[in-house]
Amino acid sequence: MKQNRFLISGGGTGGHIYPAISIAEELSTRFENNKILFVGSSDRMEMQKVPEYGYDIIGLWISGINRKLHFSNLLIPLKIISSIVKSYFIIKKFKPDFVVGTGGFASGPVLYVASKLKIPTLIQEQNSYPGITNRILSKSVNYICVSYLKMERYFPKSKLLFTGNPVRKDIYLSTISKKVSLEFFNLNTNKKTLLVLGGSLGALKINEFIESNLNYFKNLGVQILWQCGNHYFQKFQSLETDIVKVKPFIKKMNHAYQAADYIISRSGASVISELCIVGKPVIFIPSPNVAEDHQTKNAMSIVNLNSAEIVMEKDLDTEFNRVFEKIYNNKEYSLKLSKSIKKIERPTATEDIVNYIKKFLK
Image (cartoon, rainbow, N blue to C red; front, side, top):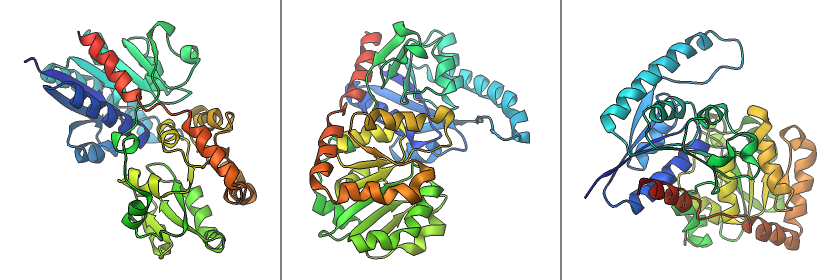
């Protein structure tokens, strides 16, 4: 039996890493005899996260441009050349049948080299506004899988496939009960639970807001499951109590989502896809520090369907409590948000992407 070999590249943040892992898991299921290798940035979180799922990964010396004037930007051309050369030797040695990119700096050199070597390629763009890496790659890859309509503004229309964003199987196939999930985090099974997500790297402004409003939530009778990010855990871990659980990173997100009654979250495209499947009332707090403010655009695509609420980071102190109480005090409205966001889910996104890969390889 022929072995199918897949090279997958993407990383930098969870929004690029977890779609890549989801695709890898589906490829492993659908191709009986397979070999999967990841390529990432040598100093980013994928080097730790990908092996946790049992996959091998090779790191490239690659990074993005520092927006502030910094001497490290002088190394960018050298890093690009180095990564293209290393990608060439990785591909020549591994001999992939298909190469997948999910965004992030490392995917650029890998997909560029693969396309030049005439190896079938696919990129998966999570956001409503694509990153520069995928915009450049779109000219040479075979397929572009997207999650938003009207993406022909950025990509060649003939290559577009509307699939949605891949979501990890442990989230959309989860059968864990709420009681078990609450007990998993040592939370009270009789209290309402707020899940706080600041993205895989954490969000300082959200963390500081939660810190200054712990008494507010306590007075409402709400307990908190708080993913503060690895960067900020040392600063906020002392705030943990019997009703406030502070985590640097939550690996068992299926438990976290099931435990939650309400969720506040950044609005990266991947987490939005998960939240649509989870179907809980959500308040988005978009990061203002991303290219073209794409997190606000992502969030508004849901808010405009009356499926979630939004509070801008700059308005947290003046607007958040009003918006949260609108949900907390109105069970009918809370249920409406849950049902509405659930209608947007696309749980078969990963399967659809792999269907296209399988079709291409026939």
